[in-house]
Length: 153
Image 1 (tube, rainbow, N blue to C red):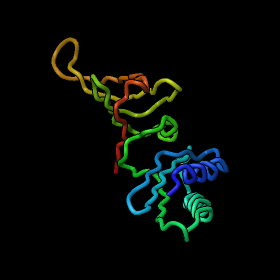
Image 2 (image 1 turned 90 degrees about the vertical axis):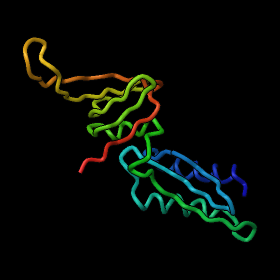
Image 3 (image 1 turned 180 degrees about the vertical axis):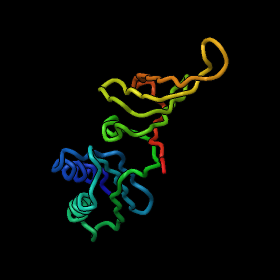
């Protein structure tokens, strides 16, 4: 299997829709190819079909047997591409850094960082009891080891 040819075909198909971007391209055993794509506002099934057809119609099945899967990231998969943060604004994220773990609503995304917001209960400065405190944290993208969207039912 000519992996460079497959990469070129995937990139050609993605170039037709600038809202789409490649998350992962895996070449498995026995000619299996798995393409994971995401989009700035999701990926319709029709786009997965279009990408699959573009790749499949430009490869010669008579020379090589292969299986092709074009899919989107699983909701439980971590965020791997900075563009994925934009489509998750206003969703709750769990973010791990080397020093701390954060869980909060994604407020803002820049080229260098994300900003999370959350509320927590803390002891009163004076007296007994607790008060609700609003917190906000800006986390550099380079510090993030793992970020996942929290699934809320």
